[in-house]
Length: 331
Image (tube, rainbow, N blue to C red; front, top):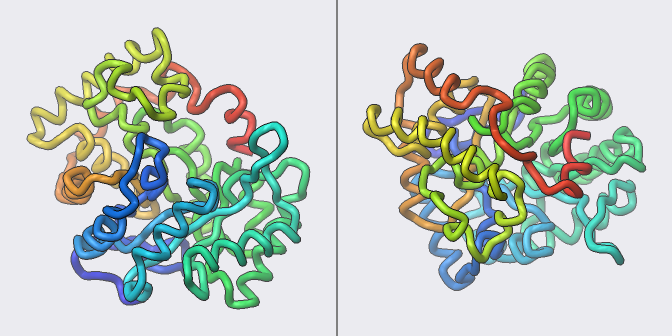
């Protein structure tokens, strides 16, 4: 794929594809943050591509295949204009949800994603969550065979701790590691960055707006009524008020900078290194435009330091996920 000249681009790893410096996380297109209009999604995806976004992030988990099917329909005739990333490994179980990193399942999951996406090759294929019961070498070995078969171009891991990344990278070069990274939650991401940078791996930052908290638009729990964010500790009880107070400092700085809080924190994240690609999710054109325009916000070293100090690392109240889900991250 030839990169669009509309937006700045960054490379995924030492030999991966170039992608728009801000990508699009597609999870919200499958009803996670309230109902979505499937009939409007193709036009929204095409709008994003026309604006210059060419890095689209999906997963078989999102709507249990629904998200990939949506993308497959939306990208007809546009395949050569985008880098498609998707993920495997989270599965339904008798008790709810689990993780499967067995080699046989890797092959099965990839075949299913290719069919739903209606493409011949996935550009970037991630293991969505690490399976603690399967050696990472076995899972990545199976992912490497997908590359040999021409079904996948590049490999990645999600929510993997540094030692896991190093072990996986010895089996097959990784192009990217994806972990939550924002001004609100960054301690684990910054620890991971030391390893990815040493190995020449890109860092893809999901939830760069703190699941919407950092936009400054969430002022009460009523603002997230009807979606799954209500289950997240950052939005619960006293945590909500404490985090809202932290974000108020960002709102003040953004007002002084004549940009939105979302643009300010995305610009801060982009300034942390050329190897970082944030993938904010949205289903609204106005928010998409707002996120893209963050690329025009230039921050001085003094401003970057001031933003970092407004929400110091580790200051956020509440874990990143509910207790059960926290057991499956950073493994």
